[in-house]
Image 1: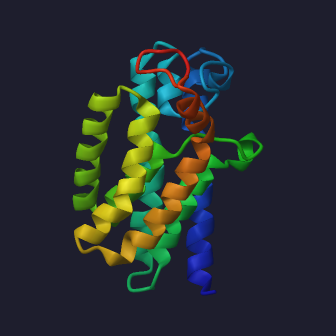
Image 2 (image 1 turned 120 degrees about the vertical axis):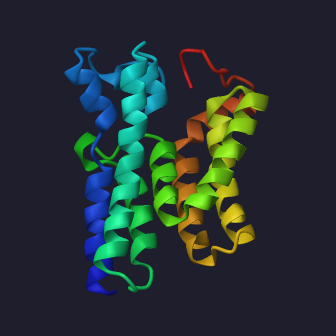
Length: 199
């Protein structure tokens, strides 16, 4: 494997692994976000602390740690086949399986949005619309997240971005794995809607 791809993947994984949700809530004196709600370090769970500002900051930072390594990889190693795609998958994996928290992290949706912004922003716009419509119809955050990540590679194919289809499939697989508890609750009819304490 090309050394540039390995370096890109490692840098993206490390940046993606920074648990911003946990760091922000602790800095704000709100304790360990993993002790509430779903136990995730993502923005949806941070929102359950009641601090909308921290939740918004978590969304932006989690998205940034997906976008930044992809932008860096694409600009430092332009023309290197697959380097940005590998960085994208590694950043999401770093967020979901952070080594700083015993390889347990967030669910990956915001970071996935960040990497999609860096890979192909027009596809992100379509996916944002899919997310909004799905959320409005289902009123369940996990459903809208999962539908959107599954739709992303389809949207990339339909919009003629073939080079990002495979990394988006890999990202979708990671996000779906992180939503396995949600999937179980959906199958049992127990998944709470927006505004509930666990999701």
